Image (cartoon, rainbow, N blue to C red; front, side):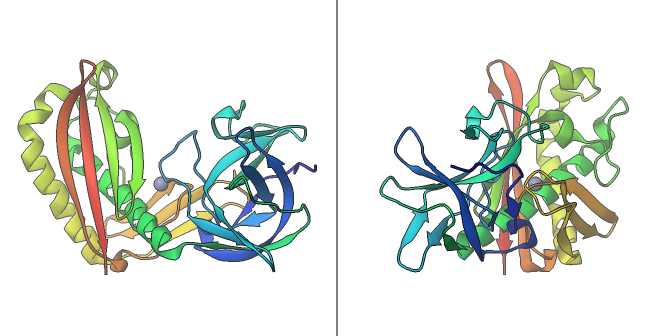
Length: 291
Ligand SMILES: [Zn+2]
């Protein structure tokens, strides 16, 4: 049992969907499934700290046998114990801890530490999530832009210099196949920051139209999309960078993305207001259609 002292090297940020790797650690989890750590992986894991983009679907194979990766999550180790998903007791990047991609294999799987394996990610599912994630970032920037003149106080600007409604109000963001769902909390704290939540309902249809018009323009611009990595390891900073007519947008992001807006035919959103536990909530459903 050799737990790694450094983060897993990840290749999915570069768009990789396959590669060879060495098994550096395996252990049975309580439910009998097999946790497998590789030195390097193209498999995108779910990060419970910000669970927007879920696990890739993938297969790990040796020369003789192939196993499905039934789940893939971020874990961490202090060199003594492997903690998986929600059990990780420290913040991402904590000193003395290695943050690792934990591939979960079925209970009947066997793999030896030191084995050389091939890992392949299901490409169509990855492509669908990448389209959904790029669409999600575009939609959130467009939402910030159409809400910009509503603010009555100065707030932190977003990647295009607009007041960052998305950053100030986001409750959860879920990347779907060719889409996303963002939920914003329109509560007291947002009102205190200077956003008039009570008048939103009257504007909603006009806002949705303006948002969709902005998205049509951005998709038509066909700008480049790329991930800039400040290192090859799991916790190294990575940024989504997108060339838009009004400037270069740059957002910290650990997910996977398209390479260009020209891969999209449309990004369209629907806005809906609801009440959740007495607080107003805005849901933005985004559909990102590719060629
Ligand atoms: Zn992202």
